[in-house]
Image 1 (cartoon, one colour):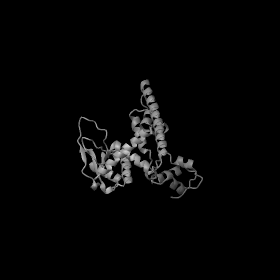
Image 2: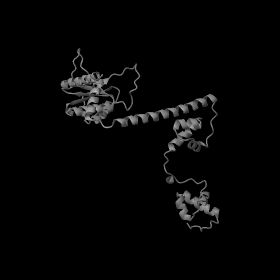
Image 3: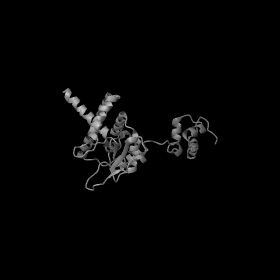
Image 4: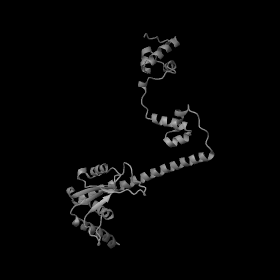
Length: 285
């Protein structure tokens, strides 16, 4: 195709040439270089109404939001409602749905309820930010534990969560069960500090029968740095149809039971350490 000169005297002829190039799949840059147009305003006029070829369109992270916003607008939602649902700005919503019909005006009570919800959502966001800031500051106050600090924490943790001997039922062995991965991590670190060898540990998952038992065993095995095949058969809890369980979903992995074999002596020492801590407080008082 013969390029036109830079005078652009024949606008319609130039437009026909540019449109043909666009319909052939050329980008703006390719068209500009082909017909030697350096004026962007002129190029915009020549391309007016001609969509860009699909290959030149970059994927937009907000495409899904745009489609959802248009869907909600067609359902009659206002900008405020759409903003609450999607969390995007009103300016973006306006740009995406401006060609769609406006919904009927809501009554005063509904508008007041929406405004109250917006204020409450903002208040919740402020509270959550303050909550996270307090937790982060408290975390920074702890720092790295000394061996003695870990020892004392572990004794208290076991006495709060581990099995205990009773005068009417002798259970002098160290058995610990918990559903919190961080608690399990601390407990295993405490056993390491005490010199308990990992080969002396036995693991078992306690979980509802309807849950993913194998997935739970893989999760806890990874945390305990052992192989799932080393786990003892899981303890399955039967489901009571009269109860509404909240511990469901992919994040539910039951509890991990950690048993120290031949641990009667260890258990007696744990009990003695605990009473020593209590005595240390009462003597100080």
